Every structure is written in structure tokens, then in C-alpha cells.
Image (cartoon, rainbow, N blue to C red; front, side, top):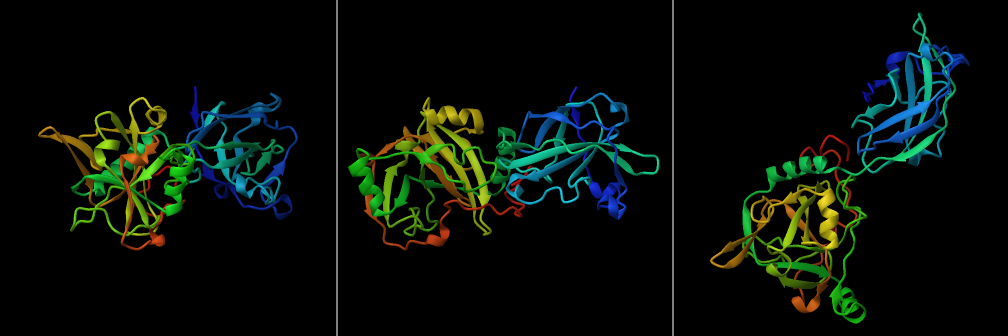
Length: 357
């Protein structure tokens, strides 16, 4: 049976300090040192831990002291006081057990962990073993359960739907010149950057091409300003989005501003991108969702996008430039609005869930 590890702050178990400072923690060699530590069943905010230890004095163990640190701190002296737990104290339960807690575990983050066994004495002091070896592991991405929580939060603020007719992509002139000269007149998918939620399973993994579809409220057309370049590729919406395209929810975030962004993925049925998303992202009904729809009216496909979020649409296949047009925009290049490698605001209550940032 798996056991859930109950975690307490180490301060609840007496003073912090070393033995010379009368910490209440004494070292007793009889207590077994955890050996061969195993970490498995890793999620974005939990893991299972087990280890081997000498059966000698095993029955005297009442608690486990667990030192859990982000790996980026590995050059610092984690064990400033060798025999004082720096992170977690748990009652001894049969192994393996689950360590879970969004207040200290973040998704897609490297950690180190070491363990001591301890015996609580009648006077409230602890006898402890030596520290175990230090083990490294990395937490996982958000699961579809966590992404569904983000999806539900995004649906709350999506707003009413506005009609649109084209997807567009802004870049510098050199980008399109390179596509023509070196890529057989095609825009090719590239790996998504690390913008958005830290636990997003598409960051650094999904290959695609970013498009926009948001329109200006007063004109119904794409805005003339862009942070990504003065040249714009426009393509009729039905070329990328139609009944043979699957739609997935990818992320919901903001960048310390009033604007919120929703990342959606358009993947042609059966494409590599479609197979990637099926395993990792919540699927959306293309005709009935709060963000981006494709419906049929009088034999024609009609498209709508959410008004109150900025949509970033990733198309997972190459796109031939002959499918649309490239022209220079008349507006400004507003670099401050770029979302390249943008960091999500971890304090925003609108777009964060309780399993880390």
C-alpha cells in the first residue's frame, strides 16, 4: 500500500541549530542510514520515495527527516548544520510513501533529496542517523488534469465570440526571404519556447508555427501593429482550421499585465503534432468551445475567436507561402508586447492553479 507523507515544518520539532547550540538533536550510530534511495511515480507536484536500510534498530525509528532542495542551489552548502533537517519532517510510515505538496514542489524543476532516520526521545529530543546519499530528480509537466483546471479558469474570462476570417503571422522580412530561398517556399515548424506556464508540456517540446487571429473590435480586421515584425503572412482561416483539424488547449497565462493569453494548438488529423497533443493536452470541440470555433452556416465555414483573451495559435505542420499573402503592415512594431520566453506572473489569481507555477 502506498502512503501519503504528512509533512511538517522542521521548526515544529524544536530549535534549529547544531549540537553545540543545544539543538535537541543528538547523533546515535545505531540508527540505520537510508541506502539505495529510489524516486518514482513523479508528477508535477509529487513523487514516491523508498530506500533500503539495515534492520538493526529499525523499530526505534519514529520519523524521517528529508532535505529537499532545488538543484540550482547545488553549489550552496545545503547541510550547513549536518545533523539538522533543513526542509521536511515526517512520521515514519511503511515504505514506499508519497511526498506531495504544491507549496514546495514546482513542475518541471530539478531537485535534490537526502534522508535521515530519527528517533524521538521521551524528553522530545531526537536521535538521528547520518544523512543518506544525495539523489537528483526532476518533477514532471502538468498532466491533462492540471491543464483542464487551467482551461476552466480561461473559460471564465474568455468573453463573447467575434467573427474572423484570416490567421496571420508577423515576422521580419528576412524570415520570409529565408523561407523562400532555403525552405522551398515553406514556413517550417520550430520548437516552442519557454513562455507561459512553467509546467506546460508543450514548452521546449511541441514543434509548430505561431499564428494570431485576434481582430480589432471596431474594424473586425487584424491590428496593424505587431511586436514580431513589419511583414505579415495572411491565410484564409479554412486553410488551417477545418473539420479535418483537431484543436487542443495548451496554456493560459499573463505577464504581469491586465492581458491574458491562451495558447491553442491546431493539428491536422493524424499528423505528428496531433499524436503529440492527444497524449498531453485537453481536446476541444472545434464547433463548441469558448476560444476558437469553426462552424458551418449555409454551406460555408464560419470562424469566431474569444474577445477578452489574446489567442496564440500553434499550427503543427509546415505552411507553404503560396497558400496566403505576405505584405508589409502600416502600423508599429511594438516590441514590448512580445511573448517570446515570457515569464508567467506567479501571483495572478486568474491564471494560476494550485500545483505550482
